[in-house]
Length: 322
Image (tube, rainbow, N blue to C red; front, top):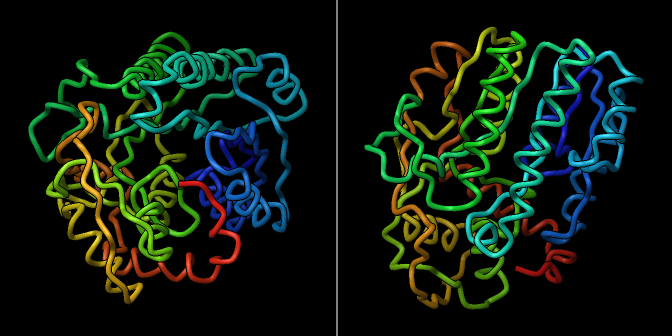
């Protein structure tokens, strides 16, 4: 297949790209390489992709309609995987307009260009943040129309656009709701990366709340496998990709990191943010039925792998802002 992969230098996008290239696909990757977090992490991931045959990179923002149009005109894409997004609940409260233009307008640009160029398969990243207030474990049919952050609201809008294009244009749509992704080369605005680094550096962990909050942590390779598998879906489906109703507390995550690093963390408790969810837990039966997908890496093993990556890259990670 020849695939357009947006957000290819991102945490999830880069791993998805590696899996696609490893199976022999041609991947045209786009990423605007913005400075929301240290660009060295994006360049680190991108370097692995550029070393693989079949990869072509373009520094493009999905908000740039004209630049995307040139790509669609130059290639005959079999599918689009849209992993480009402004992510992060707290940052979306500070800059909601950026989240709206990237997550919603950017999605619209892709859908319109797909229609114009006859591309009939769309896989997009969504989020477990939509399930705020829903009964656990979260099932795809839950009412998600009451988002509690601009990030979740813009992802809900993107989902609605994709479903509309399925209805009007008949494109195949797979909407994947990811649950707290972690692993090597992660994002420094997310707790797994930050906490490992704070413990490793001997700096205080900034913990919002008392740490009893639970998350259905999902290892990066599991997420990427599910994303690639979703390319085979027909119709329009919303699917959870999560740890499988096996959430652990933030305190338990910290304990595992301390064990893997061989040192104790210094914890600084801060008030819990109103936009943060207390608990998440994924019902993943649908992913099993439609994708033949199950998570394979448990949090203990996954966090160990993440810690080892941080140790190997300690020299340049010391300067990464958290």
